[in-house]
Image 1 (cartoon, rainbow over the protein chains, first blue to last red):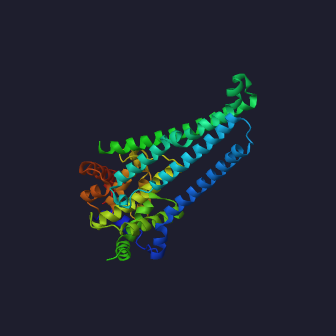
Image 2 (image 1 turned 135 degrees about the horizontal axis):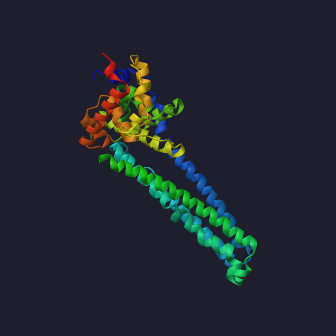
Image 3 (image 1 turned 60 degrees about the vertical axis):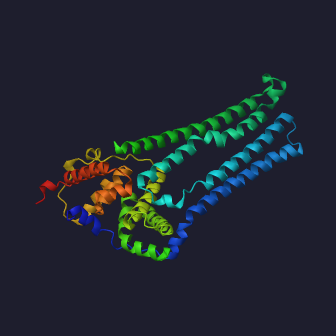
Length: 190
Length: 170
């Protein structure tokens, strides 16, 4: 090729110094270190949640038996989320050989993986906490009727619903955006 | 040859191409340095299992572009920006603002400005085209069909001719 674009393009960036081999090897492990650190934070937060609600349920600090059952359900829900995090983290890095797949296949697989994780957030990250939280907040209403719920209980219901609904909506919206990107890729052959 | 030796040989051969590829994906100098390091790390890792599945050249470009694509996908989630296809980009750069360019540095600057606006698949084809890969090699690296590659190369040639106003050059 002798046109000015190829010539100018290939004449640029020819003075690049190669990184030292030791630095390259260290960089190859960086991704796993980041995932391990993120998971460590999630696990530490889970220990705090389990400790907090476990203390309340075991020591009688939570008097109402229905609310206590709610605390146990939150602990079970936390353990379910921790299990999901562990399972998903082990699958987060595709097999090494996938790094050399044709670019479009690699890119589509990445987008699909991210879309599915976001679209399922309600199922694996929010739903496990819902029964326990509902029991804890609504315990007086379950025992004495809906009229027994005070203003603070309704405020708690509203805040929980807003937080859960907000997280779910934001993740669904992000999943829809990724789906549009996948559709764009699928249309490339057209 | 062991993994270190294979990586070092490939890095010497394709080091400059990797730098150019990184410039095509990331305009920010600081982030570009990180991207180049990530590409080299992925390349070193990949030579642990390279057994001639395709040509070494295709292998290196696949690994490098895959790392860069991941970089772009992640960055776009943090900072969305509108990208265009090859068939749309003419509307962005009005022919009236082009001048005959002879200085190579300025040509590269203008090429990069165009490349940064392209959607990933079109960007990949343009970068590989500028590295002198054949249509068949571009298909092998990207996974696009021969027809899809041919259509894009045709558009790239038309875009370059129009945007840089080659018709006015002797």
